[in-house]
Image (cartoon, rainbow, N blue to C red; front, side, top):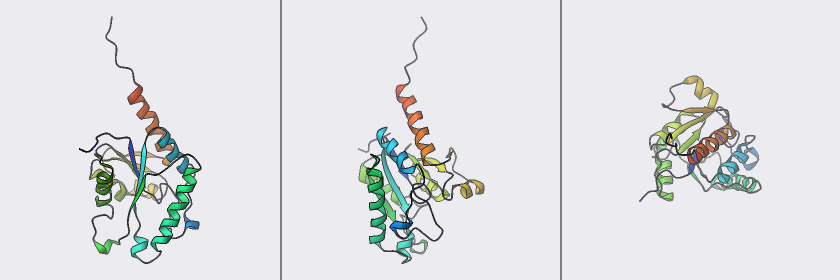
Length: 197
C-alpha cells in the first residue's frame, strides 16, 4: 500500500541544483552548484525530508557525454552534499532524446512513476521543484505540487506564462527550502484550537 503524504521532495537538476547551460553540462568540471542549493538540500534533510532528483539528460542520447561522465558529476554532488550533512536518496534520469518518444522524458510522467514505485509512495501533494514548464507538468500529471525557481531557465519560463494552477514561485532552491520547512513546521506544530471557556 503506497504511503500517502510522505516527507518527500522531487527536484529537477540542471538550473535548480546546479548552473545550467544551453550547451549541456557534460563533465564534472562543468557541474557547478548554484549558490546555497546544496545547503538547501541539507536543510530539507535535517527537517526530515527525503530528496530525490528527476532529470532529463538527453546529452547521453545525443552522444555528447557518456554514462561514466554523468556518474562522475553525481559523485561530485554526493561528496559536496555529504560535507554539508546532506544527501540525495536517488537520481532518476531520462537519457533519451525527444525523437525516441519514450515515456520517461519530461513532460511525460515516467520518471515520477518510477520514483513512486521505487519508494512505495503516493506522489499526491509531494512538492516538485523545477525551472521549466516541462518539469512542473511532469510532476502535476501524477499529483505533485508545482514549485518554480527563478534560477536556470526559471525567469524565461515565468515570462512565457502558462504555468500549472497553484504553481508557487521562489527565487531559488534555498528560498523554496526555507518556505517548505517553515510552512511544514507550522502545519505540524500548530496547536489545536481551544474551545472558548
